[in-house]
Amino acid sequence: MDRVYVESSNIMTIGYNPIEATLEIEFRKGELYQYYDVPQYEYDNLMQAESKGGYAARNIYKKYRCQRIG
Image 1 (cartoon, rainbow, N blue to C red):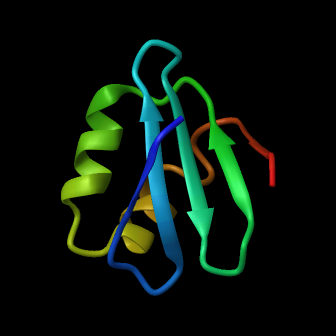
Image 2 (cartoon, helix red, strand yellow):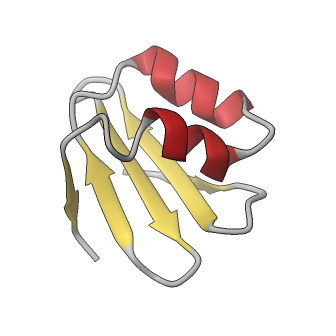
């Protein structure tokens, strides 16, 4: 999955696969997580959010099943 660099103090890159509804977030500390069954609107809102970390904390991290992959 291709990821793009974002301006954030905690998040380095974000990627999304709309076919599988899978979101990837790579943190600045090096961890890489996949979040499953994430709707397109959540990815769109995350990418448009002024604070990506804040948006993810409120709407992604505890709402969607995830797995650390790196």
